[in-house]
Length: 360
Length: 195
Image 1: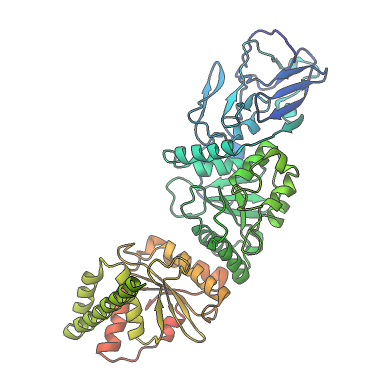
Image 2: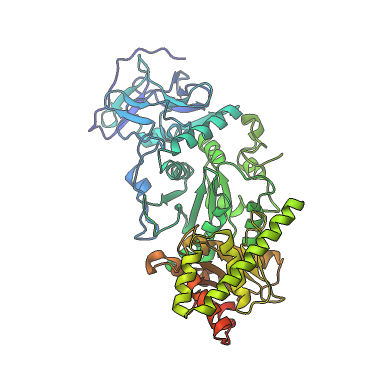
């Protein structure tokens, strides 16, 4: 690990173009992510350093850009314009110190980690909460690109090679994630939908979630990929999973009837935390719906979304078209998980348990 | 076992008493009085309300009406008008649950119809309605009837909504005034009854 002494840095607010360098001309070429402690930045020279918050200007870990939230789907559809990244409001912005993460409020969703372009946010060792890396001897030098040769912009940095070493997502950390979600969702009414929206954005599915207090539009969320609409409903507290297929049928009917969307251009998705027990009517109703209406509802779990986000894997239109149909004859979500993460058993010891499906 | 049997017998006796009370009330009253008194009488009922709805549907001419047993979570359809060709699933909302027919009950009625057509535990046809019975119709801004239209356009499935007062009118017409009712209006109902 490099041991470099640089004075404490602050990013000027007007500094539109900036670059990160270990020293002049030395460019980072890889971020090595882990879910067990701080991330590592590797430089062209072979030197390494730990990921550290650089108090960057835009703070993508805390706030989405306007263009990421205000997307054009069904003109006039009211939606929640809240641009926060942290669904549980654990991230606070401090003008001098970058960001601060409140461990009491952190549910460990990991969305902020995926948004930080310099690997500055990391999972603490037990994998439950995240924290922000702050170095007392800052590693980074921030230089205006206009004044530097070979400098790189924010976006270029974002696109450097990323390597993920996510292993042993323990049952305790998975349970803690759900426990914290259930605890905090009681006092944070839009935690559920903000979390789902943000996961989907991280995976490349731009979407809108329903506006608070809007009873006219009953969709929980509405995504768009390549002119296909992805209406969605979620039930993460587990109170009304049997209501999900019904709500989905309602959404598809409204999109088709009022907005003239062809049913072939609709890919309905429901998001859950845990699958219901094997004998639940949920699976049979999904089969009934497909048989009678031809509507195939996809089911995604939050845990799956989290792992994809941590591994930087996106979801394409084709993925949503082809996979994730769960019903009476097909209750194994694990086979879909394996398509995306071939070594899932190694990185997640919960594989095959109730987080994905009820049995191996 | 014996306890269960006794409970069932007791429920049956209560049901017969309710239906006799309803008939007596109709016999002794004008239509307006009958509706007012019945609404007052049954506005706080839940389980009994389901059976009374079943009894009224039977009285107006549907020969075989099966009301789901209390606590039977395997069968989520509240009641079924059983027919050898055109069975009708019924979603019932008692006044204790909700006074007005709502979006949730329409969604449930759609699911009821899909389940019936798919699993075929009673024979039905696609153009036969799936009924929602509630204490009162919702107001125009509820979105209930728009959703029924949406469902028809998207899935070609009829959802019919009928409230307790309209059912009482049908009952009074059939039992007291001995009118001939056109049950086809209910069998193929889409949207509000008598709209």
